[in-house]
Amino acid sequence: MHAWRIALPLLLALLVSAPPAHARAHKTRREHHPKAFHGLTPAGTGVVIGVLSGDTVTLRDGRVVRLAGILAPRLPRGGRDDDAGRGRLAWPLAEDSRAALESLVLNRTVSLMLGGADHDRYGRTLAHLVVRDGRRPLWVQDTLLRQGWVELAPHPDAPKGLAALRRAETYARDHELGLWANGFYTVREPETAFRAQGRYAVVTGRVLDAADARDRVYLNFGADRRTDFTVEIDRRDLAAFRARHLDPLDLRDRAVEVRGWVEEHNGPMIRVTHPDQIVTTDGRWPHRRLARGTGGGKKAGGKEDGEAAPAEADP
Image 1 (cartoon, rainbow, N blue to C red):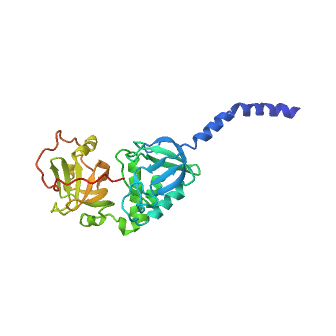
Image 2 (cartoon, rainbow, N blue to C red):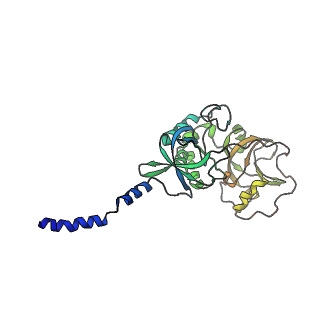
């Protein structure tokens, strides 16, 4: 009896201090839903039942999810990734890239995170994916970039998280991991940009001239604007630069890195639609507002007009 008099107060204290069962269960459930990070916003979960390519999956509820911010090597047309039809031959390591994504997410519950728009122009869900690695959330895009199985491909409608993803790709490039050990994906100089025609590529070089030519801005990387590598920015896309107080004309005589789909248009050319496609390699852009009414001047140093623009490429 004496022992019960001692134990009873201790037992009552434990019961009072312990949280109710529903509170414990609620806390456990929360741990499976990662909080917003890198500016990304949680947008529910899903179970991956198929991996179409290194950047596209299908969920049990029927949604097709395009992983935002990255681009995987294209599989052959008519193969597992026929959603965009970019080319008929597989790019090198395309199946390795798909397998890398499959190892991370297949038959697993993933959390969807939004970095902007929630759908791309094909109607696919545009999202970042997060899976659990023990109790730690694993950002799928960051992991694939850091392993070198995909390239960074900024999406204009989903720009959040880009700085972290760029660091992940830089790590893989510096260590020549995955794609970056294959010459097909090598970072091009302006003189060799033509070798990447028809596909996504990264080109680094110095802008010799920046020209405002009627309804476009051109960044020229060679003396002959009819044959050398050029970047073209349409007038309608300059609003995205203005929003960040950037002027492409300030890039004259600056070393830059530009990424995008390489076309043949009086020599190799990349059409830039938003600022995240260009970074300077020798310093930051000056931040200032574009002058109102930029344009309307004579064509100076740009490529010839009058040719139809190709259909927009799937990022």
